[in-house]
Length: 296
Length: 296
Image (cartoon, rainbow over all chains, first blue to last red; front, side):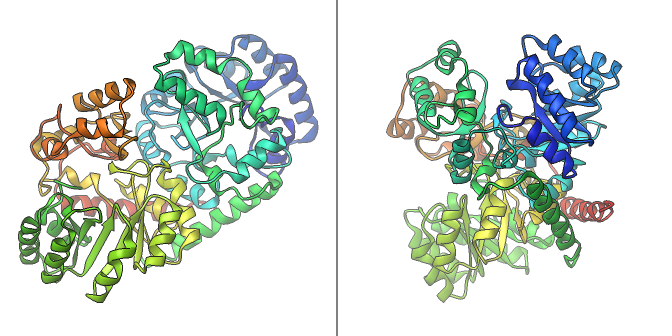
């Protein structure tokens, strides 16, 4: 959710009854500080920060998070062993994002409070095993004793109910919130998400770091490079810096990186974050009732 | 389920309360005739036949199916427009397997009685869009008015309940039944399914026909050929004939094609088909009850 999830979206989700998450992965410490200040002004409800653990100047981010009184941090893309104890010492609830059972067990051993298990259908960075949410959740549920949150493919209330059936106690929803007025994504990217059809996203850059994105000219260039035998280094060069910003924040639909999940295929309109929360919650309750009415 | 699902497995599943399916894709007409005869002897319950529509001598198969009084046919891998009317004229219920909304609509237009929507996590041949079961089901449910059966990633009762939440009225389970005494798979393949861990299967041969299988020496050869720029024709040559039989029926774990779904990662033992049916059904009911007890 880098470049898409700032204070406006996070506070709107929290005010609507969800737990808004600010995606710090695209923010310098100074920007994060400003976003946290604005989010604290915009909502009295709790909100969280997602922090990729591979960030170079992560100590500065941590200090900003501590100073702003953030109560919940979602960590991802890295080893939770190092920073979890420090975060816990600050009284912060720590949730770690994983894509396989091995990392779920590591997160539990690191002392995190909850785990997000994210499947292959999710947008953005993604696990190498390509395990889908449907297959991943029951395995992680059986392996750990912590609260479990499902991610990847959760764009409606039916999928949310399915996640609960699989053993989750909550869901993390990203892509569906990109197509909201409150998302900081570029308007052209929001429209691309609305326009996306089945098969329009793909997991690519597998030699580097697997990422799900919308197929475009940049993806075609990656594919051509891979066919020509490019290794991780040359793919890294092709990717360059600022590719995600170019696509999702600046709206360059051809040369940018357009990270979004498979749920984009059934996102049909841009609508307010609160309406998304209400719609998903309502469908979740309807689905639950429909299951209760089955004859068995 | 080619090479895995003969009369023994199909009749065991039907006798246990499921609908057993004989996989005709690996059977000459004479073999299918024998399998149907034995299945009719082994169960008084209904059972079905899965028939890939691309089969070269399909007219002979159809005649065998008609003569044996088969009441339900699952068609896959091809256009249901041609044969559905003939099957319906024989009083046969027709179910067509799809991997996207477009084919679901085509199947509905062709007059089939129900649709199986199968996601990316499924074993064997698979859709080009790579849409997972979690994302595929709600889209197909919204697009068609027919009874909908979920497939791909359904190896336990939690996943079955999830499929119902997503809009399915039934589930098609393949991989879980490979690891049963009644399956005609080679013992070594059954053990490979039990041994498989997360990430051990992969969707490959995408330039030819995408297929999910266990990574082994054959897969490594495919990967090397693809890296060297192999086209569909040369991949077809590499695949050759009888590769699936070699792996799944003859138990050559290195040079054979070992088609299985991601659920193999949580299959921990070979157990009787009836016990599989009972276990999944019991967990489905428990899951349904657990959802009913949620506070909302």
